[in-house]
Image (cartoon, rainbow, N blue to C red; front, side, top):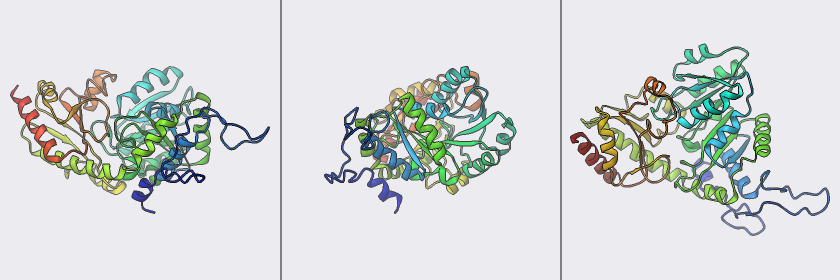
Length: 383
């Protein structure tokens, strides 16, 4: 069955008793046992809730994994994955990544004895050179990266990790399983901030983990149940509703993103554009090979950092806000927002500088979006 159909059928007729088209919201914390020693399969919603279970099964199916797990936020999902590691373990992580992931690694897990090196994952030799035998346990990848859209060859890095006995963990938030399925390319664990494209409407916080094999499913399942980091039934239902339109939204959003990227490249007030679909992007060929599209995230630089605030303050159709992946186009200043917790010297080194603007492109009419950018950028350049 094609993925568009599987996406549209997310949560369809899961209640065989009533035949409800939409999965019911099982707003209950506990379940009655038929008799002593007898269970319906549902005991307590921290462990299993029917609404959440449907969402988790949908995500496992879409990503091609063994099991899915739904969490209260994207950071809850990635924190649970990181809890598989312990004192003395070493991780390799994409050098250009979401600031919240950097923060949890440096402020929470480093104090527990888990060390991290940040590596340019586009350079396979650099990844291999950074592995510490006996200590490195996993490689954590964002591709495309946030916010500079660097592309990692997932098949090659996963093969390297496998040859060294390491896990490959991929944050697939930007691409979603509609466009990219890392497990099919050799990844062991896939992580999503479900708040973004999966939910798709900027109205629900959630996170998702999909595991490739039963032994990993057992580990994540134990951590989730023991720590209680779960998504509630109402939010699970909102996620299922959002997923149903994922393919339609992603097609429109990436169509708009490609048009904006091409327009920005020609704009004399724009210094550089980062979008994997552009012909000159260094990771374009890899992206074509491993994905079914280029996504709807892009970043660009302006010649003078003083323009950034003026541009952001002038947009009217586009909204200045954190987050991404909703139907509305959002403009973000990574240096002050999503990457504010990364030290300035590291931001400078990786290129998250004060002249960089990020766009999460929505489904509005393209003429309105480009018209808004035109007036904001030209006005910002004039001061």
